[in-house]
Length: 295
Image 1 (tube, rainbow, N blue to C red):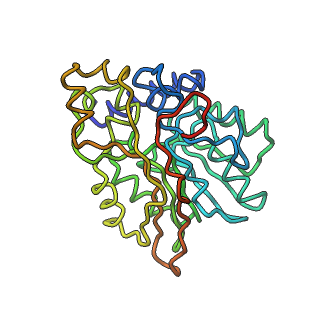
Image 2 (cartoon, one colour):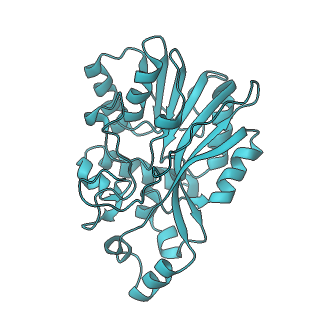
Image 3 (cartoon, rainbow, N blue to C red):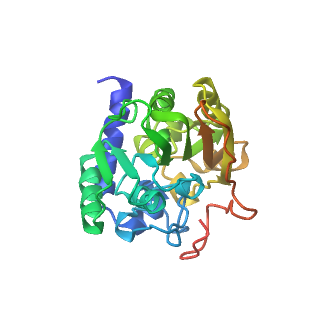
């Protein structure tokens, strides 16, 4: 098994476990992995509870943004959600696209697909479909989607450039994506970069912010815009599992930044769209008090 396949298998196993974990445990950790913290409520996730179409049973607390809030989904659109988990973003997207549209969720974990299909059945949504597959090679035809969304998933994929190429292939001309993800400014300590749990926890697999945006531009997308950005702070009680006290202080006081960004980009072939941006004050800090909903 090569390195890429080993990483995929790590993520597959971990997210099979996460599918059965308590939401509170997922929210107090890095995307459900990397240990849990007693000091924060949501390390990464934004609050979905006031978003129309939200379904509590489908919210596993694994995201790092609210991409559907910025995705400008219209009635009748076909929407693809990459790494759809238990279906939360699909159900929010379905609220926007309505009965006339179609939503396709793609995930490569058996347990997540089973959970998502059960949730869709309970809700009676016959225009929401979940397909098992690898987002590096999507089980979708060319030029299908009006909009693609994803929430804290590309950082889990070894070949991010291939996923971005697949997004470009499956979008209709003029279609767009809105994706929330974790990126870096500066180099992570090797102890974090090399740890399987931190990879599955959305940190170890993150790449440099400039490289991330560069991949999008190189693939041919235009109208590239960061719609929202917030700082991610890993709590000391998680960091201490990986770093000595000395290295932890170096990390915290250094020039390394971990950020959640929501990025919009459009496939050529239509007039450039006006891009929705976060309102002033929306880019909340990622640490907050229990139940505060500020993340």
